[in-house]
Structure formats: C-alpha cells, structure tokens
Length: 167
Image 1 (cartoon, rainbow, N blue to C red):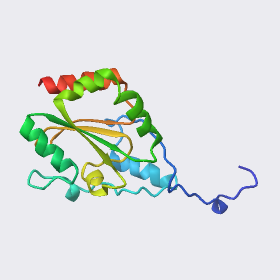
Image 2: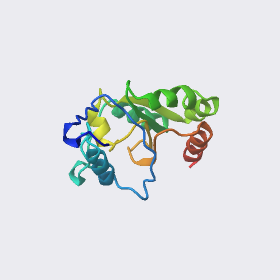
Image 3: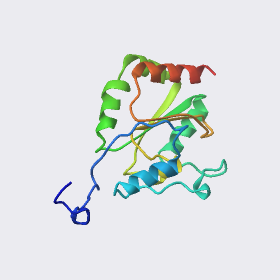
C-alpha cells in the first residue's frame, strides 16, 4: 500500500486463528508450513519429521491411549476430535455437526475422544495435526482410517462413520 513500509508492519498472530480448506492430494504438510511461515506466522507445531512418525511399538499419547484401550476391549473404532478452546470452527463443528442426530447415532459404534491441542501438544504432534478442527478415525491399533481437516457436513460424517464401522 502506498505510504506504508513493509518493514514497519508488525505481524502478531499468536492468538489469531484461521481455518483453511485444502486438498491433501495436492498439498503436502511441508507446503502448508511454508505458506504459514511465509505469511509471517510461526506455527505452534513443527512440521512432522519422518523420525516423529508413530511406530506400532510406541505408546499412544494420553488421552488417546485410554480411548484405544477401550476400543480394543469393546471392538470399536476411535473418533479423535482435535480442537482448541479458541478455535471458532471447532465450536461450529461441535454445535452443528457432532450434535447432529445422525452423527450421534453413528457414534454408537465408536469411542469418542476430544483432544485439546493446547493441553496435549504431544498427541497433536503425534497425529500430525496442522489445522483445526481435525477429526481422525483410527482402529484399536491406532492405525489411521480417515482424516478430515476443517468443517464437514453432518451427513458426510455420519456416512463415513457408518461405512467404516461396517467394515
């Protein structure tokens, strides 16, 4: 903008939040981190390294570990909802999607666990969460079956829940 010098602009996004929809088949996590950094934001999470990837012999981070144990005992899948208190889109997901009757009914075949990304950064990092809300469906062994970043329609989520539970 005329009259404004870029070097005089201070960017402070520590508590600002934004939701971004993207096609994971066209964008890598590393690209996302680069764009966020180029915009002047320092992500609270680091890009995942291959060395950070979970292996089947590692213990799951809490509170997901107890959900996996319950899922194993009950023969269910786990739906993990990664969110934060300050995340506006997370509140919309909770009030309009997760409270929908079709989603509630589909969740009968699941162990549901909400993970506050600020309270459990290790769990957030272990599951490579880069945006919120993020829903991850895993089996009792912790293997990822489905991931959605951002908002999702109740019908789409309940259909996915039912399809995966039927397998």
